[in-house]
Length: 216
Image (tube, rainbow, N blue to C red; front, side):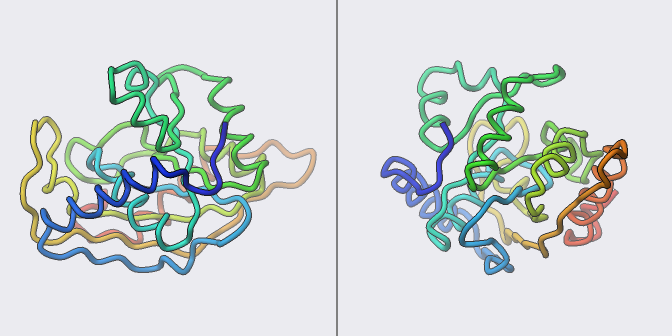
């Protein structure tokens, strides 16, 4: 079931998340929030350097726009005690990594068909060196089939706030999130869509918003 307006549980968890992030980071810089549409479907695609990335985006986007984000997340996390419940409350549905998860793809299409926002990290996993990696084809296929605008989201600094493998968060000087201009990807009827090309174009649009040290 996709979400449009954020339910109470989501609003409470995002309020707590924003409170915690503000106390851990000396500076939080967010630009481009006005580029998120107030109505209609949209696909948010971003680089993934920390598991805090979706929390950061949701904690700032939902209060600003009044819209919930529906997330594609790893299926195994949905089975973890307490964590799975928390993820479902916050609009996450599971995807089996490394497999063609048709059910998750249909759920993602339904989110967009109902005019809601879908968040995806097309790299499929967190970066090991903070540099943006190759994008998989799933987000490209969703964009082409739905016609929804794709909005690039670049995040930096969250890997220092909660490094990969760390049990607890740490203080960070600056966290930045920059939201770019929406773009629609289309193809002519009868043509075979070039998924790898569209995926690379998406990655390039995110990379262009990142500091140089995060680019490949």
